[in-house]
Length: 254
Image 1 (cartoon, rainbow, N blue to C red):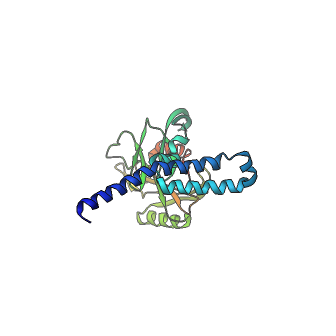
Image 2: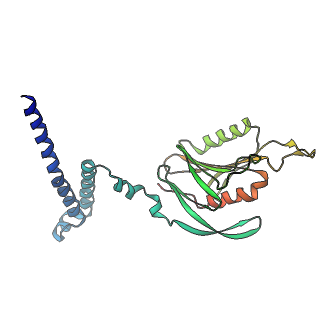
Image 3: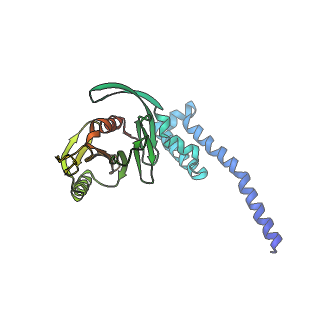
């Protein structure tokens, strides 16, 4: 077979396969349609079990033939379509109640949603975790303020042990470790930084002493979400409280 004949054969083969694709697509969806909406006689003969079985088989064929297209993935994964984009939330900060507009944020890969106060904070997406940080960057004299959300292949017990070791390594005092049901169900661990002597000669924890608060909540897939809040002592009733209010809206979508 010369080169021209070989090229012609390849071209004919490709054309044939391309032409049969619409027919195969039509045939597959016809099968699905019949399984979804069988005739009266067919329903009597096949019954509910047969319908489900046939539909499952047809769906498998459809995925195998056409693949999972972007629209198909959106049907399964698009979390933002499942929740309202924004809503109003009443919060209490330092004894004062206020109504705050919150905006939906969703992570398709980690499979969670949360509403954030986007007038004060913004979401920074990372490769393996997300961080909620102040909209306006704080001056250098302030310790870090953020709320990090990460999904881990670990048990609650393993994460508790890991976090407590990390606090000890950073010479932070363990102030809280308990099971809670608010703002989320899980375990909370809170550590506070060491004291020091300030310019006025006062020794102990100061306004800028770092605070780390971790929430650990389990998923249905033998994993946990770890939410790490970082702020400083004076901001506990400000940023710390606002983080907890935002965390009330945290929802895992399996």
